[in-house]
Length: 303
Length: 266
Image (cartoon, rainbow over all chains, first blue to last red; front, side):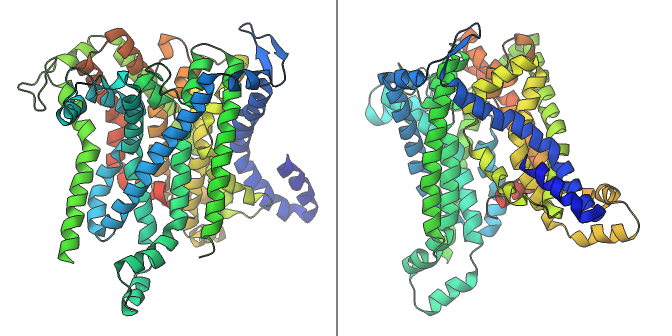
């Protein structure tokens, strides 16, 4: 809308400007229409739907904040929010520091990266449902290798996905497997952009390995760290399919993160008002994380 | 320096084992006799793969996945290419909003799935390939467009200008001169859209209900329900599902990885 108005005004600039502006708008038009119709409009509809009570026959009535009140009044939903935070914190807290350490370790060997890069990135392109099935079969109680390993260490036979703590650790471990090497390669690419002269200058000044890290590498990769934190947080927060494929949110509701709750409510139980309302909660959570990370990034720009 | 090299190589090796073990486990299980407990099976069998192919449904799901994926690639690529060219080569009011394209892929798209399903109902395409192709394309367009924009920015504009001076029209120049130069970028985008669409379970689960349009990830999850804990068969189906994205990725990994990691650092 904004764009077409500007297009109008450019008409005064004669045929040349018209031609110059018309072409790019024309090129962008199909994408923009699709994005407005299937991304921006449903966003607005979703917020609107969250204030309605929608029956299965499609009859809806305005109920104000009723859906929000009902959901927040539920112990189950408060746990959904909590488990989302746990899931995100668990995955990010595990994968980002380890991947950063690994990235520092591998940047010295650029030739090695070329060769191993493709292998490392495989978990990232594996179909999530397939990797979930692989993990489920690895923790299966009759012959799963992880079950056997756990029995060797603890001396007790666990049915891993029937134990709420172990089930949570399984979904975190699975996400860790999927995201670790992506983060590592992302950060390694960031570290590789630091000019080697800086390190040489550091060495001349007598800076040790730790000083070189804390004064050169860390400040210069802070921006990459922030971006990758944001990407992984968003992916983990909205991840419904791998958790659903691994545990269906169980045992009980003990791994039912917010996205899984949305999926189950909206597309299995067809409670559309709850589905839309939980969607708004997820958007609000993303906004909180985004603002938090952008603040961090703002701090990074001072270097 | 030598010691650091050794540590690096040990690191590479450990990460490789960590990354590849689940896949090794999947391959091993899919070729093992039922209830085999040792890590290296005593004998190999093809029975689980055979049991997949005697069910005609599996091939149908494979075909469905391929239809949706190729449809999404065919819809996304030209739209993204046009938009990317506009963003890379023209100056126009509103261009700065292009950065939003990097924000869209981060949003929790699951949040808008409920209204999207009701839109598809109203459009009369619920439970069809069309709905899946549309939604997968729309959700892929932002990142695809941004990726191509950066590729075009990296190809020299002088070649197009020279073509223009030679009397080609702008669109003629784009087709004849710029397109071949953008080939690596286009391949990166094709691989990206193919993999994300092929892998997606969520949109298919939300937008379809009948068996005739079911795609592979949906089929795999429903197998768990109908087969119980038949892990050998599930792993076989999973390994077959992985073949197309894995082959594409390994074949074009150089361009795909370059395309993937270059986008965020600009």
